[in-house]
Length: 300
Image 1 (cartoon, rainbow, N blue to C red):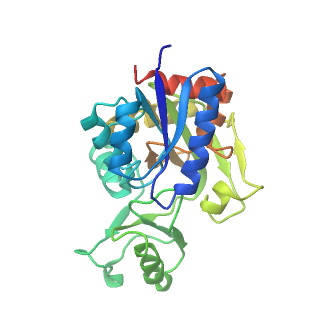
Image 2 (cartoon, one colour):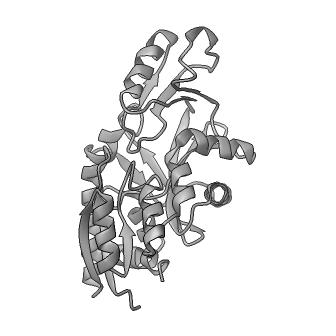
């Protein structure tokens, strides 16, 4: 395939910058090993993107978090006319916003845990709180579990909300689902094999994702084939409702009654040595090199 000169966009200026640098480096090396003229580009300004558009034929977006994953970079590249990997501006912005993603899923009749939100116009009110405990508190626009806390009682909730507000003015309080955690990568309209996540931590937090050596990733996940297919179909529907395209990852909880619950959608998942999309791709028969090439082909 004649890709021309490829800029692998990484780094950025979000809280996930370090993870993005690792993802971008891994993607760049995999492309170069295939003879593709790919260059790792640490970008954080419009001027840098404008310069890239003048000197490259397409971009592989490996930016995580705000600015790079939330539709901002996508909008700039659309305006500059530079083809890029992954979802467009609108779907990227929605996927980065956990609250509005859940509203969309809820409106489409898809299962997602009960929730409420806290914002500048809707302050936290303990007297009106009715979701059963435990709950999980999340900044609405962060990734990699940054700013998240599990809360077991009402008297702990205000502090967890204040902690999350250090990262975002809008905070999501979501019902905790007791059960097993799964994730599924989506690649070019196909849901890859599910991965079950097992951690010694209270939940799959930042340390469990990037630092822990005892986190287990079980793939194949050994669910009954018909149940795995049901969850994969739900994930493809969730992906489509948000308007996401090409590739991404959807996280799901499976409760004790085997009911799946949609948690969130990642439009630019990690591509590090701890990342989940490459694991699922490997089980489906794709090497890391094939995976990044398949994603890049979407820009042609």
